[in-house]
Length: 448
Image 1 (cartoon, helix red, strand yellow):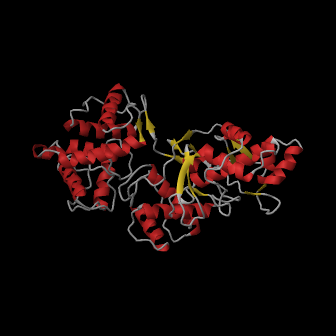
Image 2 (spheres, rainbow, N blue to C red; image 1 turned 180 degrees about the horizontal axis):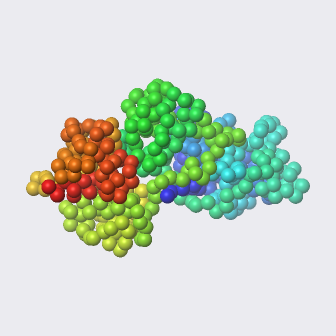
Image 3 (tube, rainbow, N blue to C red; image 1 turned 120 degrees about the vertical axis):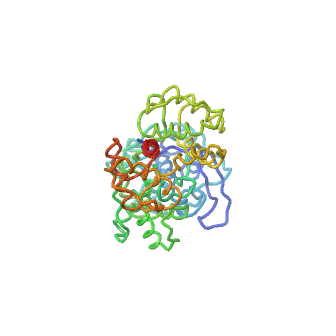
C-alpha cells in the first residue's frame, strides 16, 4: 500500500503578485523561499526561540498550500503567491539575514501538525500589533520566548495543546495530483481511489451525488454516475470521465468541505491518505501488482528483442529485475530495477504501442492480448466483444457458466459469467476483468 505523507519540496513556484494579478511565476528552492519570507516577516534580533517558532509557521503554511494544491485546484499554475494579503510576503532577489538562513537550513524539513491529522497544519499568523488574527502573533512569540518558552510551547500557545512537530520529513520533487491523462470507466489505481475518496466525502455536503461502495480502486458504473452528478452540480461537461478540469474541481470542493486550508480543519487522517496500490515494487514483493507488471513485460518482450523474455510468476525476482532494467534502459528511465509509478505509466503506453504495431502474421496472438484497462459492467465496444467470444467458447464445454450474448456490451449476463469464472478459478469475486482473469479466459477458451 502507498501512504501519501507530505514531502518537503525541493522547489516552490511563487506568483509575484496577487492570484489574479498579471505577474511572473518564478520557481525557487524551498529553503531560499522560506529564508526570504522569514527575512521579510521577522526581525533578526528577536530571541532565537521566537524566530524558530515563526519559521515553523512559515514552513507549514507553505507546505499546506502545496500539499492541498490550493492554487492548482483553482486553475492556477503556481503553488503560492508573494502577497501577504493572501499568503506570505516574498520579495524577489532580496538579501536574507544570516542567522535566519542558518535556522532555515536546520529546520526546513520539519513542519507543524495538529492532533492525528496528516496534512501540514494551516499555520496562519499576523504581526500582533498592526493586525491581529485567530492564529499566531509574531510579536507575541517574542514575549513568550523571553519568558523561556520553547518553540513548540509557543506554537501550542496559539494553535492548541495538540500541536506537534513532524521532524525530518522526506524531501523530494513534488508532482501535481492529476495523473496526466483522463480517468474513466475501466481505469484503476490510486488516482481512481483518490477520486472515489473525495466524492464520498463531498457527498456528505452534496447528497444528490450517488454513493460509491467499491473499495477496489476500479472506475466502475457507480463512479461514472457519481462523477456525472458532480459535473452536473458544478456546471462541468457531463461526461462521466475525470479530465484535468473535473479532477481539480473535485480537489477544490474536497479541500473546501474538509476546510484543509483553515485553522479549524476537519483534517486528513492516515487512513484517508493510504491507498491500495503501491508506488514502488522491488525484489521480494509479491501479489497481483507484480503479476500485472509481468503480464505487460511479457507481451512487450514477445516482439522487442531488447527486452529478454524470462520466466516469471507472482514474485518480483531476479528475472523481473533483469526485464525491468532492460525496459528502463530502452525507454530512457533510471535503470534501477525498481519499478515505480512513473515506470508503470510508461509501461502501459509502451504496451499500447505494441498492440498497434504487431505484424499481421501475429493477428491471432494480438487478438488474445488484454486491452490495457479493466473491463467492468456498463462498458461496450470491440474489446468487450472479443472477451465475450472467448466466454462463448468456454460456455460450449462448461455448462455451469451462465452464458453470454456476443453483443459488445458488458451486461448483466456477462457479469454473471465473470462472477462464476472468478469463483471457480480462485480470483476475487468482483465482476471485474483484469489482465490475469483475461489471460485465464483466453487459456480456457482454447480447450475446445
